[in-house]
Image (cartoon, rainbow, N blue to C red; front, side, top):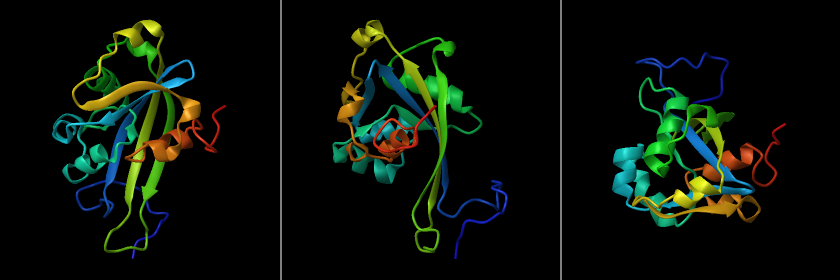
Amino acid sequence: MFSISKTKALFSKDNVPPGGTCLSSFMVISNGQRILVGKMDRPEIWVEKFLVGTARAKVYADSGKYVLPARHLHWYESPFEAARSVLRDQVGLDVPANRISLMDVQSHVSGDVNDEKEPPHWDICFVYQMKVSKSPVARLRRPEWFSELVFKPLGSLKQEDFTRGHGDVLQMAGMLGSGRKRS
């Protein structure tokens, strides 16, 4: 049986959470009260380029729900480097580093800590933000791995409009629904 313990969360060869742990960088790209969201297409590209798990990529793409620009970190990559890579490689925006700021760090556990058959999965999310003017928005082109890539009004989005837990990330950041509010 698993449980939340006071044990140090040290990751080593013989000490890995049984359900796995992911480190991810998310980009909240805003233009006024709108944020950039996309719908996944071409699951094989997401597996190869953006480190989405093979078993889940097609499920996410077939859901027809939105995702934020995001990906898992590579070994030894900083969260900030991953965020810059998301902007450049996933969305096609190359911006100076000083335009990107850390917005939130979150910890999500999905699953039941008492389920030994399917132990919980732990996500540690680094959420970055960048505000864009109309100029970069006009130049934005939808890459082939998105069936849709658009700025949507925040007020029109709900947590359940997203797949991959991305709605949870926005809600926890205080951007959707009754999430914690940022000061």
